[in-house]
Amino acid sequence: MKIGYPCMNNTLDCSSSRTFRLASYSEERLIETVEQNLACLHRILEYNVQHGLFFFRLSSDLVPFASHEVNKYNWQEHFKMTFRKLGSYIKNNNMRISMHPDQFVVLNSPNEQTVKNSVAELLYQATILDLMGLDSTAKLQIHGGGAYGDKPSAIQRFAEVYHSLLPEAVKSRLCVENDDRTYSLQDCLQLHEETGMPIIFDNFHHECVNNGEPMREAVQMAASTWQPERDGILMMDYSSQAPNERKGKHVQSIQEQLFHDFLAETEGLDMDIMLEIKDKEESALRAIALARTLGRVHA
Image (cartoon, rainbow, N blue to C red):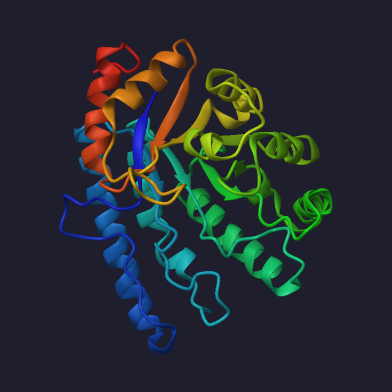
C-alpha cells in the first residue's frame, strides 16, 4: 500500500500549479511558468520520498493552456529532458503517479466542442506521463459525466466517444471514479463493461451514493476491474464528511478513527490510497503513521 495526496504541498514555499490569465499568454511567459512548476514538482517529489509518501497526483496545470488552441509552442520538445529526469526519479523511488483532469472534461457531453476539448485535455495529460517514461500503471482519473435525463444513453455516449475518439495513449491510462451525485459504483461497473476502464474507488462518494454494497465488498468490486500487469493495483480516493457542512464536503483534516476503521474493514486488500483531504501532506503523514501501526505499509 502507498499513501499520498494531490497536487499541492502546503509545507514548501512553491507551487507546481502556477498559471496566468489567457489574455497574458506569451511563449516567454509559458516557458518561465513551466520551468517554475517543474522545479517545484521536483521539490515536492523529494519531500514525499523523504517522508514515505509514495503516491502523488500531479497538477493538471503543469503546462498552462497546454490543450488550448492558443498554445502552439512545442513544450514537449523544450522540456523533454526535464520530464525524463522527473520520471526517472519517480521510477527509481517506486512512486505511483496519477492525474485528475478538471471538471470540464466530460466525455459524454451532448456538446461536441466540450467533447473535443475534453479529448485534447486528456491527450495533454497522457503526454505528460509518456514524457516521464511512466508505464500504464500511472493513471488518468475522470468522472462519468452527466446523466442528461437519460443515464443509459449517457453511458452509451461515453462508450462511443471512448472507442471512436480517444487515442490509445489515453485509453491505456484512463480510469473512471464513482462520484457523489450521479455515477454510483454500479454505473461505473457498467462503464467498465463497455470500455474495459478500471474503476478508481472513492469511499466517501460511495457513502453518498450507493446501491447498498458494504464498504469491503465495494472495494473488492472496484479492485476486480484492475488488470495487475496493465493497471497495477487498485487506486482509490479516501476522505470523509466535514462535520456540520453540506453533504459531500471533504473534511479539513483526517479523522484518524474513521481511517483506522476503514483500514481494518479492508484488511487483506491491497490498494494505493489518495487522501482527498484539505490539509494535504499533514494528514497524509498522520495516515501513513497509522497505517504502519496496522502493518499495512512498511517503513
